[in-house]
Length: 102
Figure 1: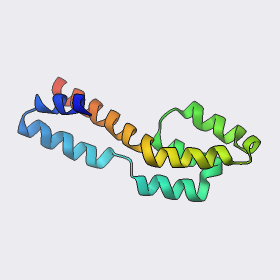
Figure 2: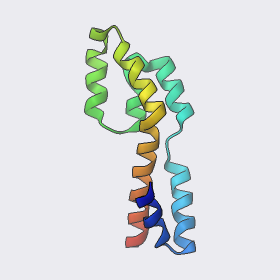
Figure 3: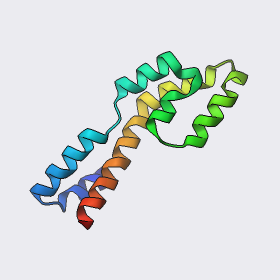
């Protein structure tokens, strides 16, 4: 997180506005992740929504039944607590990098 603040500090006010606006349109919502997990967790739809580690989502989709769907249940909790924030941070880093290059 501190590294992200350092990256932001080198931006002009106009660039910060662009980053903020673009992040608001692209960031992933914890509410949406929760609803997808709650209703479709056994199908790993929440992982596909996060658009991260698609191989992980496919594996969970195919093998989740072997764990009696305990794996998708625990994964949903992890997504809500940690993964959504990580995905949004990575997205913000990419946006900052693209704004700096422009």
